[in-house]
Length: 169
Picture 1: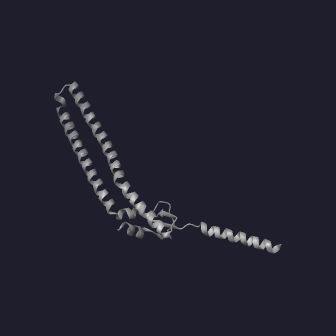
Picture 2: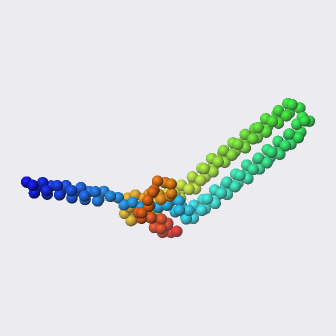
Picture 3: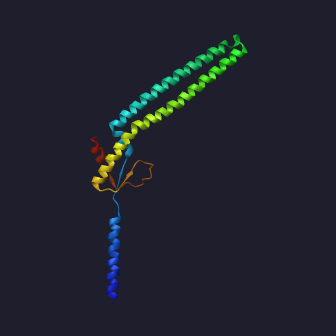
């Protein structure tokens, strides 16, 4: 009877230990920001976004200069104009200033939209490469190793070199 108990306990411990060993997952890490920075598509997208930003900035700067010039002109002419004309000019300047503000908001929204449009396919390409490398090497989890993302210790396999190779970089 005692031997049956010992065998049963040993069998339970063996099954539990085997289950625990099998339940352990392989974990790797990769600094996604570094990966994206090395991708030529990201550099192209950043250049396009910078060019668009410069265009919007130039348009806004031009409008601000025009507003400032009108303000100066109206201010200099104010003594020779009637109160009604000055009021009308003040409203015109306010309307112009409001339209510049609206343009700034629209430009910012367009920049965000364009950034998402350009970077989404790049992120998807990087993610797919990470998934292929992780699957090929038998990893169950891949954690972003970017500082500040919650990863404290990164002693596991770093997939950056393998994913760059997968992408042909």
